[in-house]
Length: 372
Image 1: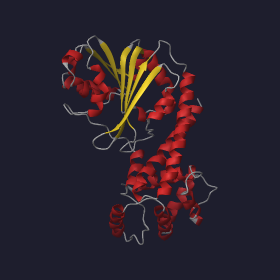
Image 2 (image 1 turned 180 degrees about the vertical axis):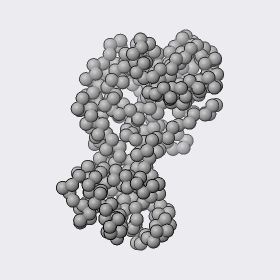
Image 3 (image 1 turned 60 degrees about the horizontal axis):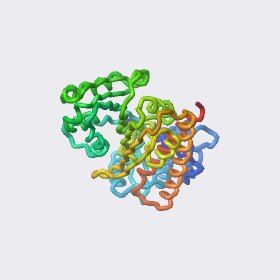
Image 4 (image 1 turned 45 degrees about the horizontal axis):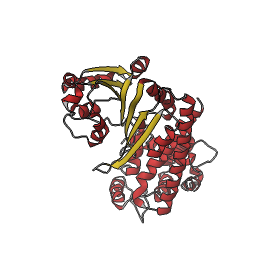
């Protein structure tokens, strides 16, 4: 990790805590830093003061970091790892106080992930994908032609799952891969041809998002597999409106998501069952959800939405629903943050980082939703 990235990651968490100081006792850290913190300055300028203190007076910077780290949840194993690194540059941990910025701790590792491009899931031919097996099981009895859209098709995770289905089903399938960039949909098409998926199905098409929504194609299914958390909520009104237009009456929108991301991603918003309930209230969809944990412990959710009428929901209804969803989610997050501090469990500091960044992302995206 480079020095610049360390400083940027630190700046992000400082900004988050300052912006949310009304609900975070950690704001007291900044008022205890004396000359290193000026409440009249913007967060970025305060960060500059703190970092300048590092270069001009290293002891002063170490004092600040001791206060910061002393108030977060740090496990014993992580303290040992950090101490080993600190000793390389002449510092150490004494009586539970960290005297240098955490570099390898999960807390900062998660923040770093949220500042970088997300890892791309690499699908593998023939791999068992339990999450998608359950999502695609209602296709098993198809005995007539149907059209399926893979929205956010990526490198073809859903294609691999569909490829394992019986030939008696696949011969009726028209597959449509949709993603935002030409380079991405090219990967999907390569996957289709590499595993001979195109020879098993009735037909396939690949579209950029804008081209698909400009078409007059009406479909039986739209699948979203680990895509929704990447889409800003202020883009969802138009997106869900287009879904309603292009899904046939009694057609389905099927969503698979992680309720809690394992690794951080830029601007992510993770979704729980209550978020879906509020978002799709009074729309043309009937909804059912299933929450469960994978064998590896990942927290997952499958959502089945069946279009129950021909008419399309007014976009203002969707906007109102999303505002309500965001406000409710912030209240739930604030309550959990409070509970974390009350528990004082040193093993939960990564969860704290997760909630701080999630809250920040929701607030920023909600602002754009309101400003529409």
